[in-house]
Length: 80
Image 1 (cartoon, helix red, strand yellow):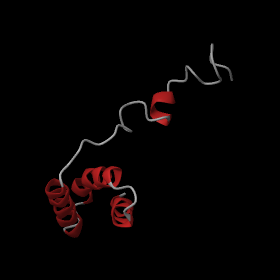
Image 2: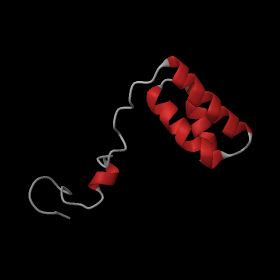
Image 3: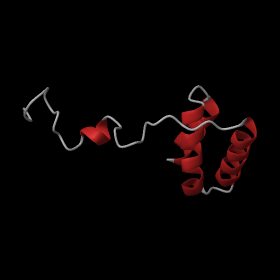
């Protein structure tokens, strides 16, 4: 289906969500090592107490800051 001018699907209402244009893919702000360690400790504490709802946004942020970390990827998956 063609949605008007431009390429197929340009005016699709889901494009912002699909392509992350709603602000979800913004670069994380700069954080010191101490702040990063504090956030990680808080996330680990919540995860250990099985508070996945509380740990999820922290692990999402940690994963955005350090996407190469398998620990954050695993914990993020465990919260979902």
